[in-house]
Length: 146
Image (tube, rainbow, N blue to C red; front, side):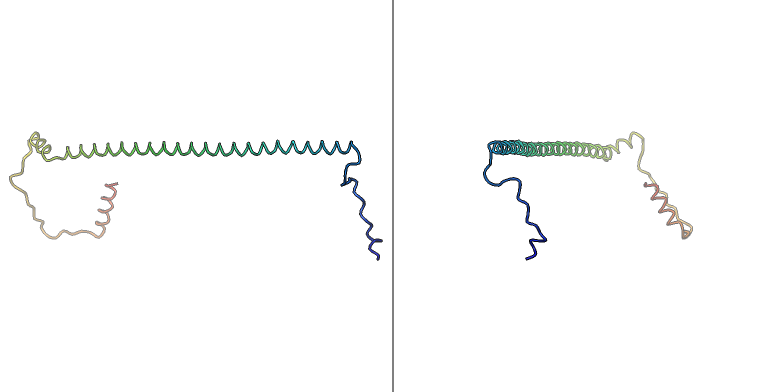
């Protein structure tokens, strides 16, 4: 076979996989293992504490949002109640100002009375209206209401 000639065998690993050859090597392995293990516990503690802090902060954030929404809801309810009360007061005042008894008393004080005769005017013929008058009058009445 020609394969061993073209592909040399792999070099043997420098680190032995079996038992330690000397006490120094065993001590170094043990120290490295304990160092890695101590870092694992620190990392684990940091991750768990970060998770706990994140959960607590999320809970507190949600509670403050709920309290803020409740506060805004009560504020809106109070505003609606105040506006409803003000609307009722204004409607009562309007009804009082428009009452027939009050208008009758006001007319007597101003010495107003029912007319004895009514004036009737007869137009001399049909009224002529130009083509543009309805549009202009509609525009004027619309602007007047605005």
